[in-house]
Length: 328
Ligand code: GZL
Image (tube, rainbow, N blue to C red; front, side, top):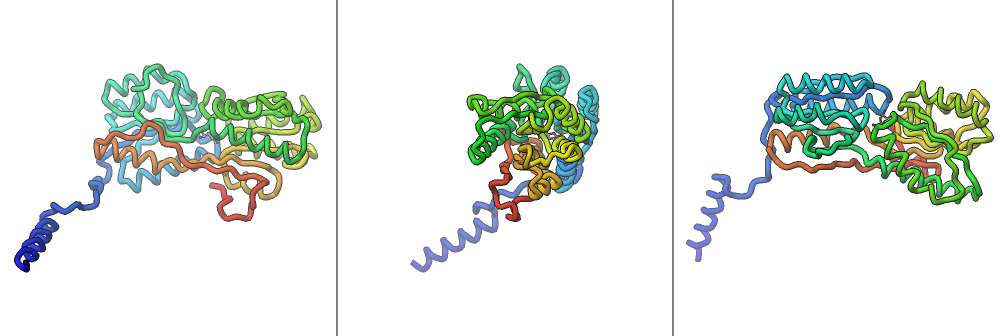
């Protein structure tokens, strides 16, 4: 018996020494710069975008990937130019945040012919050929819009409101967040006769245009004609708050303010009672993108087609002193 025990023990030691035992799956080390990522960022239009860019830069660094980043300053033609230059440079993978959903098939076909995989980050494209991109990493904007609508119903119930006029300050026309935040919101509220959307104008996700939109809306309807503002991002919301307060309106009290993103200044406005609800949209997508790139390019694995981050809603129904209520 003793001999058998010694034999089993010897075999176990041999197995461990020769690696036959099941080792935890180690990721192969990536030699710094051996993977080159071509990244076309759409602009620097908001705090969200700036935080998103920072997330991509720091994640690439932590993974040891070389990041070729080009900023398109809100111009689709510059994004297309950048993608072509990445193809010419034979990068290992292309990542981009499409400023609008249409007009990408030709340049993405060129990437496909060059054998370079494409990952969409933050926004989607409209295409008849789903093989033109490998994966999407970003928010579920339709869900974000629904959350905004669900908050408004809860608020209207709490106020016992019998009718509310809504104005929408939308994001960049034909961008995924603009389309789906609007669609999700409308799908939730449109069956409820208490709500009327009296206007929708685009502020292009810019604070300055948020100011212009609010000025126009107050001129058209007066503060008494507007009960709710649904703004597609905090930058435009913050511009609108300034205009309302200059006009003697108390946002968050005289007018219900619903926003999206969750940047620090907007979360503070929520805590100060100037905003009623913020639907969170995280800019911290870099880690997910680089992890997928490691799987796809380094480990030659199949990667998930869609990756959505987990996102919360902060509102005046919450305990806003909770440390989890914080902005980026
Ligand atoms: C959302 C992102 C949007 C943000 C805006 O993922 O595309 O663009 O909501 C940003 O702040 O400009």
